[in-house]
Image 1 (cartoon, helix red, strand yellow):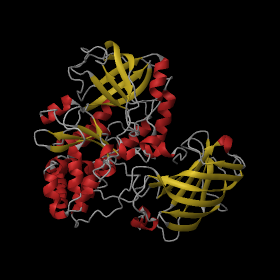
Image 2 (cartoon, one colour):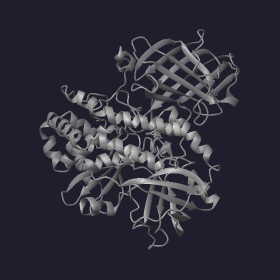
Image 3 (cartoon, one colour):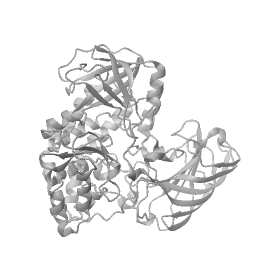
Image 4 (cartoon, helix red, strand yellow):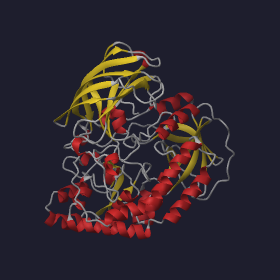
Length: 594
């Protein structure tokens, strides 16, 4: 289950999937450091560093003390999701370190290397990296490239989803980064396969738009709503100051339906946006702009004077479902962002969007080609990944299943009359208390997580959630080692409130050394509770909140098979808040199947 002990870090990791396969991958990657030091035979340098059939061999050497500093640099999640977040873009916490870098046998003695990424790719063991060959020596370059952006694919056991996603965007005519692969070592430690991704910079803009003279912004939990504009980060020195191009979209979105499209068409390339939006939905890029107000670049094209969108970060695509929304989005559309919400709820642009989705299914979505690419990438990367082979195969099987089934799922929805997007709107991007609870429980300790719960186990749960009160008796309780956090003990309480169709889970986690009779406060990094809903690994599985303040009181404890575990907790839960969430409105996958 999910480790609830660090609220801000888990919220921040918007791409985090609670999949057992991924959790095992994390452990394997971490354990591999310091053990896998086999040298990789140098390859013949290529003319194109983005050649799709080539895996770059990249070796980085820097003093161990410097590497320790670099890998431990991180964003401050409390700051990123504080009440002041609407007043500023994401922080820039990473600094450059002088390193020696060898790429396909070509050695560069003095190079800049730094950690990169928002939260989903944050890792101390396998940091995502930027390499700047020209940081100290301006003429340094390899195969015509001076800078290399390496993504660690932390959320993708298959390692291929980014490269595959960008191919679909490109096939739809959306300006997209080039992407292939690299095998990376730091100080002789093999870190496995990374995605080598195009930089969104002046060269990219020149290549796709014929000019880099406009303003470039990055969206990282950003939206076109009043008061939210400062969350977009300016990425270049060109164009206007003050984000006037973004403000124009915000103002247009405040128009009535009668005026909306005319005003938007003056500041946003609507046709290009339809393709961008439809592809995000088609590949289920739930962590993108339409689905999560995240992972996109926005460029003000100086030729047309309109905004264009550029895709980014599609490593949770081709099958992963959205854990961070309190509803099940349709397969055919994602419209969490305010821009997509307004457009999908306007009859003209709703029909225009659905027509574009049908066009993309006929042109950009070619199952035969996509499946052939999956096979090609699997063969290309075989023997180069640190991810355990069973995990890779399971993830690849999921990608193939998604590709095979996606057309029929979307076409079935498009054959029905369109429904408005009436799901709740995200209220804020700062973490707030959304619930409070009082719980008493008794369970039996077992090291076998899959063993049926003891029939004598029981919990009495009182919950106030978004202003509604729920009361119930949970009878499915498991106490045992925390599978997500080695060294922790956990108690997982599962039950269904009267009138609610989905199961609710309360997952307690605390260090084993603290698992003894007594009272302890909920403390980030130590003790806490995660509240979830739905069936694990199913589309109704959702995260509802994390303990923010309160106490856990243990009355009986034991970590031997069959030992009695009993106690109570009382406290608040926090999350990125929505305008409203009613547990009775959540749909159950099992109920639908019945």
